[in-house]
Image (cartoon, protein in one colour):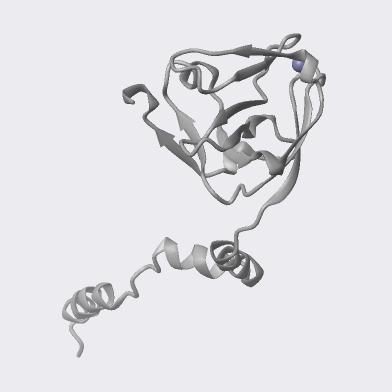
Length: 170
Ligand SMILES: [Zn+2]
């Protein structure tokens, strides 16, 4: 009574195309990660983008002869400069006023190196050679301290925002 061939061909041919077209599209990966982000993280991110305030950090050279305490805001990008000095030493700098910086020990261990216009004192520990900070002047004549974020305790430098400065061309 039934023609088995026509029945099976109907069963196969007819449903195949519509089912393929109606298959729900895969949810984009982006949606998954956003949904997976805990609510408190989302809140922290928006809090961070609104607020920015200075925290106190301890900084030092490698051997510990030079130690300082500094109050600064690491939510702001640190500067990576490609000039002949910074390009070689790889410092990640952030600038603070002298009132935010306190040298706890090591003034006598600091060696001073200057070049070009001799505006900046490129200080380094005379024992271990690390450049934990530098002293300079703003264009206004105000004293400023350039802190090397790589020398701060408890700071994940890989997580910092880095602004690249083309000091080579200046
Ligand atoms: Zn040292």
